[in-house]
Length: 416
View 1 (tube, rainbow, N blue to C red):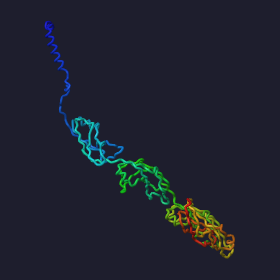
View 2: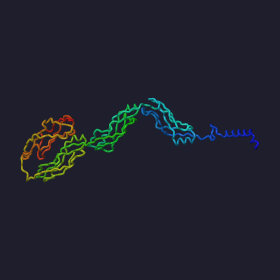
View 3: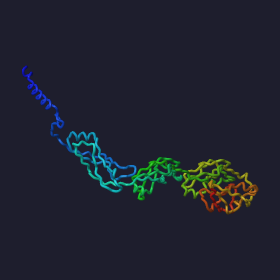
View 4: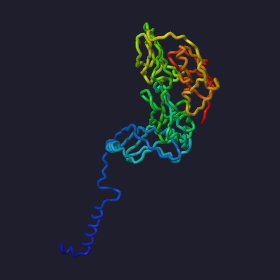
């Protein structure tokens, strides 16, 4: 053996054999030692409602026709299918970055999915419409149902803040806009001013809702609500017959006017309210606390109760007097209920005074004068123009009196 090791040819041959063995043990670049093909089980699965992404110029374009989701069928090795289904780390999309304005057919694409899986999107193609995106400013109109207003109240013009909004969308949709509304809906009757945040609805002429973007999406709507009311005189009405030997000399209410609330169509037909005094039960001077009686349709009256002073005389105190007649002249006519922004001028009588014919005992007539009468016209709820209004007269209840003129002609002008 030693001789062989000393032989240079033997050493060379041995070195060559070792080199060949070493080379054969090095892995080949195109072949792995672990690459062993074992046929695996393949599977087909469908993922429903997989989200769709769209890529396009969102600053200047609007695209319609792209579904939010699609169904996608996956076919491949079961382990890969299970992983893809569990992680959903791939994407279904449409690429419209080079799309032109108009309607066109586009194909769904899939990316970031294992190359061992075959994907089929259902549907494979869709038709989309690419349109120019525009932004315009529109005025917002507030809308509410008048039936929401409580009886006896009136709603004024709604106030919308902000009054204008910016609407962005496809030009064809923005061109169709006919109404921009903020609707207020309340579950109860309204008897005071309210403020609510309301969503904006954008509608076409046929009241179809349009798919556009509104900025801001909500606005503040204030509906001013006021009570319908006016002042009217309180009339005293005697009921029954005085007891024998008792004479009713005077009946005077401490309060001569009341404020009533009702719908406008009721208010315009009411000139007074009343208290009723049953004189059949009165034997001496007294003060009564009586309810104010209102007409049908009146919702509220203030005050509800009125004190009435009744003065009587008994038979032994009564002196026989002869009734006489006199005329109280130049009694001024007052203007009541005129709105602050109006001026009124009385055309007839043009001196704004009337005469009143008075009948009664001569002793009572001696001191009667203009100061004993309260004469007025009610100008509530009257607008500009010429009007003929009733003349209201309040005077001593123990005398008979009548104005020479029952109505007046008034001209109302705006002083703004």
